[in-house]
Image 1: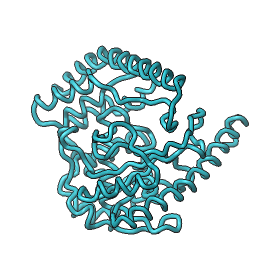
Image 2: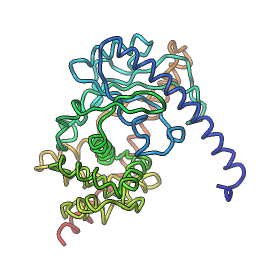
Image 3: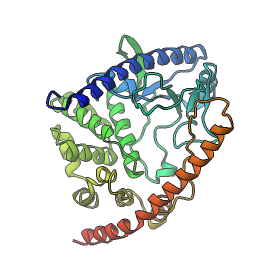
Length: 357
């Protein structure tokens, strides 16, 4: 870090300082939410976020966190929703619309406005209430069974708090499912992959863990894809069980990695949708492939974006700003999808030729 220019060092130090403050506020918010759910008689599990320590990150103060993801069993999800609402959190977007595997995000109308600082200590936390671990209907392929996730849940001491989480084997499964879902949807982030690589590195000599993993996982195709991506991107050492899973990937999936493993990283500068071909490898039949292609290549609807979403009573100026920004965002997304059509067709030809070899 000393080799960096002074202004870069100052910026990084400021980001770390602000993120440490945000982390303390995440802990405060978690305690409020946990108390509300406990009072309502709702059991829950913390997904991602705080649960990533210590296997996926060394220091939670260095890990940005913008939302609190909680899983509740489906029969209690409405009770959980009302308990969170009692803390002045409100659903953002349409109340009845389900977003993949969780209810609409819940935010507090604090009046906060973005100031261009991703580590702003004042940035409010979002709450997401999950009611399932995987949405097979949307992704059109299944992952390993989540039977037992709920009954095997454990409590861990994290930052002095007793926090309910998935057990370590199930937690790894969910981490890989979450990564692959973002991968096939074209919005995987580098830190998703880095945290998995961090885990694989830490567990490289943990024979007991991997024996338990092997005995519990009858099918681990999705997990192996996530492992392979972490290895390709970060060259992390892995346990022999992990390497064996990666070596046993279907030939079509291995070919995708040979051609397109770096595509998600390059998409930041050169938009592409090469993850579509990987998604096809996981589907059975052309009907599913056509439906996924239509959704990814020609989306008819875009997720809404609201400027200054935490402002409770927008004035005329803000309402106009939201309308203009919404139109601009929709046009920008339409342009993005249009400009990727030619690269998709060209890489589709490469993909077809590769499969024939």
